[in-house]
Structure formats: structure tokens, C-alpha cells
Amino acid sequence: MTKICAVITKTEDIEKARTLGCEAFEFRLDMFENPEQDLSFVLQPELTIVTIRSKEDESRRELFQKAIDAGADFVDIESDSVLRGEFPGKTVCSYHDFEKTPNAEEIVSIFQDLAKTGVPKAAFMVQGPRDLIEIADAAAEIKGWNIPFILIGMGDAGKITRVRADALGSMVTYCAVSKETGSAPGQLTVKEAAELGRDSAVCGVVGFPLSKTFSPAIHNAAFEAAGIRGTYVKIPTPEDEVSLIPQMMEVYDITGINVTIPHKQAVLSFMKSVSPAAEKIQAVNTITKDLEGDNTDWIGIAKTLDRFEPEGKNVLLLGAGGAAFAAAFYFHERGAKLSIANRTEEKAKVLAKRFEGKAVTIPELMPEYDIVLNASPVCPAEPASFVKEGCVVMDMVYPTSSLLEEAEKLGAVTFSGETMLIHQGAAAFEKWHGVSPDIFAMEKAFREAE
Image 1: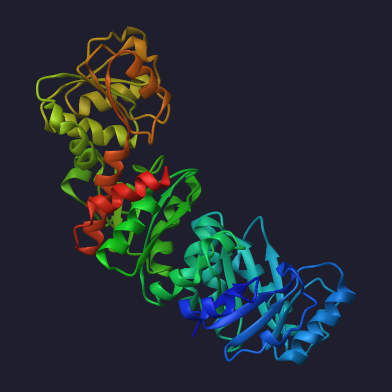
Image 2: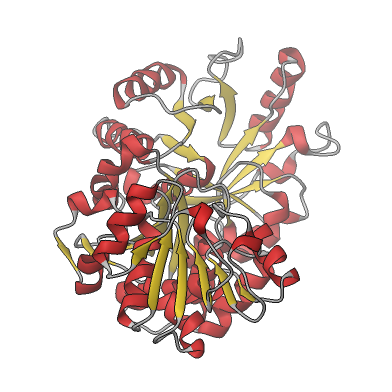
């Protein structure tokens, strides 16, 4: 059973970490103000590992021996250190790759080498679904050796390996005592790990490059408000790894996935079923554990724009990607007079035909619309060419954009994608967990994340 291992950088945190629920300690002596001090504190009822990251092997040798003499269970020594074999039966032999994750065969080979001189430990930077699957495949083989080992994925996507450390078979999962003391990308805090336990719900968002998304903030707030043990993670997913999403979901027991740019249409290829809305929109932003695809984007748009009663009004939709399909569906359902403009005119024509609108070219835009919605990552036209005073302008981008700033100067009423994000997320949360989330908690989390 995986132990929650608190990373300790000062002795004052020992009791705090224990109170929060840790079951093991890693003492990072290289981060202590005075690593030469009395090391009696390493003797604890829980499992203890002493780590010193330094190239000064002679001084480390003395400190490691001192720590073992004081009662440490293990000392952590890098696989390329000359000290590697000096403390038999007391060594965690570690390997780190801060750039990539090799394939499962290579990971197993690395562990075979590490295991020669201690408990094998390796951490790899996870870039997406492929890396997560490679780690899981390697862990499945290593578990068959019936020896303790530690396997970690780093980075945003790697966080899920820490949450599912017990399923992977890792001896410990390293956790920060607080967010301020975190020492590795994707690391949980002791409190988070203890509250999640070993069978929590895991959800996430896939897209690329996922440089900034507020979805984890609002969903994690919804989990807390609903009293559900769960977490929501970012999983950057390159185009050539989209087809791996179902396997990743199965391997890591993922309850639900949100899909964002640019994969909302690509994921249709592996859905076992789709909702009526997703069928009409031909884009999916919400996937269930059973690979049912839904589209809740249009619900988020409705929560933003229904107050302006689009029926019969002149509406301009900018963009023709997956998000634009949801917007076009919404305006069609509400009976608006829909015009669609896109840099690639042919795509605008296809979308307009699907939802009984008309395609217009960017050069022929006029400031004659009552409602404008931008569904492109970057607005494809100058705001002055389509914004008239008093019109409503919504940009799916959040928290703000140059389009919204310019539209305000031109006298428009503006909305970012905040309301859309929160309400499409709320609809997805209810679909996954069968519980209506606390919208106010989600709104608060969004504003704190800005």
C-alpha cells in the first residue's frame, strides 16, 4: 500500500505533516539551513528517507552514514553517484528525467539497473497520454517482481500518477507539507493526498497546448463544495495522441474528461455513443467513463446570452472550429439570423449550411449585428468592422481579450468566456457525478484563479 511521504525541509514541519496525514518522511537535508546539525530527528515511527542532492560526494558520504546511524530507514542516492553501492540494504537508488518519459521497455530496463543497488526509484516528465500509458505499462511489469519500488510522473499530466500511486504499486508518493514548500512539478500536498485517499474520482481536461485553463480550479472547487473526494487535472494532448484517450481513461480509472481546442471534433472517432446535442453539433467537449460524448458548451453559451433573446436578431459568429459548432447550434435553436465568418471561407460555408445560416467573408463585414460571438482563439477581424454601439459581444476567451477591450471602446456590452466555462463545466460535473455543483463556489474559484 502506497504511503503518503511528506517532503521535509525543516524540522518544524515534522509534526505538522504527521497531523495532516503523512505516513512517511523524506528529509531533504540539502534544503535544511544547517544539514550538519544533530540528526536524531530522522528517527521516527514512520518510514524515513534521507535525501541530499549535491555533487560533493565525500561530505554526503559522512552525512548519509550519520543519518543511517541516527535511525533513517533509507538514504536516496542517484544512480550515477559514486556512492551508489555504499549503503547496502539502506539505499533508494534514484533516477530523474526532467524532459521526457521513455517507453515502457526502457523504463523497465532502468528499473532493472536501479534495483541492483537498492529500492529502485525513477521520476519522468510526462507530456501527455502516451507517457502516462508507458508508465502504467512499466509499473504493471515491475509489480510482478514483488519488490518495493517508486515510480513517479512529473508535470501537470504527471499529477495523475501521484493520485493513482497505489494502483501503480509505488512504495510512496512524495507530497509537499504545503503548496509553498512544493519541490516538484505536479506534486500534491500531504493534506490533498490524505483527503483524496486511494480510490478518489479523477477527471481532467485534454487539449493542446493547454497553456492556461481555469477548469481545474472550478472543478476542484466543485468537488470540495459537494463533499466528493476527487481531483481534476490538466493533460496536454498532442494531436497524434488523441486516439490514446480511451486507453488512458481505462488505465487510470478516469471518471470524465473535458475536451478543448483543438480536439472537440477529433474525439468523435472513438465515442461509443453521443448525446443528441453532440450529434447535431458534431463536436464533443465532455466524455464519460463509458465513452459517451456530450456537448455542454452550448449550455454555457445559453447561460450567457439567453438574457438578450437572440430570436430574430442579427448574429455574427466568428470562427468555424469545434467551439463554433456549439455556438451555431445554440443560435439555430434560438431562432437567430445567423451569419458566420472565418479565415477559411469554405469552413464557414460548411457550418452555415449545417445550421441554416449564411457565410460572409471577413472583408464584407459591417457593424450591423445585434450579437457577436467570437469562437476563435484569436479574433479573425478588426472589431471596428463588425461592432456597432450597443451590441453584445461575447468572446469565448477568458478572462479578457483585446477583442473585448476594443469592443468596449466602441460602445458594446461585452462578456468573456467566464460564464460559459463555469456553466459548461457545471453541466459536465453533474453528468459525471450525478450531483449539481455549487455554481457560486465555482465562480469564486474562477476569480481567485485570475
